[in-house]
Image 1 (tube, rainbow, N blue to C red):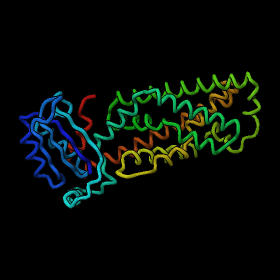
Image 2 (cartoon, rainbow, N blue to C red):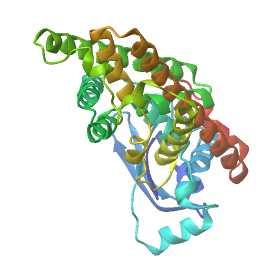
Image 3 (spheres, rainbow, N blue to C red):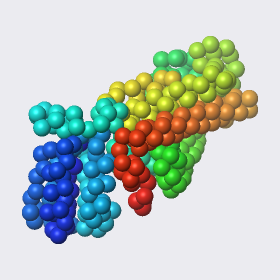
Length: 321
């Protein structure tokens, strides 16, 4: 279930509450008159079946409730509601809760994922440095660790959302964050590698020697793109599904951060062949994940249109930033 909290202008409260009370997919409707202070209005709360949230919100828009206006507020939160009424609301909604997409939540997560923060740059840099150590030591365990630490899938999924929902500003911000993030991580890792080289900790021979466990990082082949497609599809599904623990598993299948770590070392030790191979591997993986993510989201959007009213399925793409 999704708990929806609204701040409703007083003149709309009766219509909104009456509309919600008639819906089989909505339960636990609460109205607190005059409870909202900023913006002023009435507080309305209800639980809705996950599959029906987008259509319920579209019905409120038709009543004049503008979620993007200055005097209206919408807050969504996934909750467990062990009650008979909640079970009946779930049964009344079409499809399975695990397959349902609350487009408003997807879009809000995408917005959050393209906001650059020091923690994003820090995690990406640390992951890239771990990957660089993995390359030097030829450690597959450290490669997996770097993949798990790396936060790059957030903006990749946001890029897919921006492309599918025609939110070009979102796609632009995602590309910018990915470019700045990887440039920063590679530059800082290369700087540390130069210090290590000056201290005689590493040398070009560390990259040129046989590395059976990590040499694939800078040698992309057709399977690299296939794996990136599968990982991108799994990652987007883990973000949109009602219940999924698959997201962490995605990172052990792709080599974006490891390729960045290898790139940083190749730059510091100046190995042009590995520079080109690492860049190609990084581009193949980012492209593959984006393409697969957009394809999965597009398919889910088509399925959503079939289960809901066309206007409800399209509503999320009509509001402004």
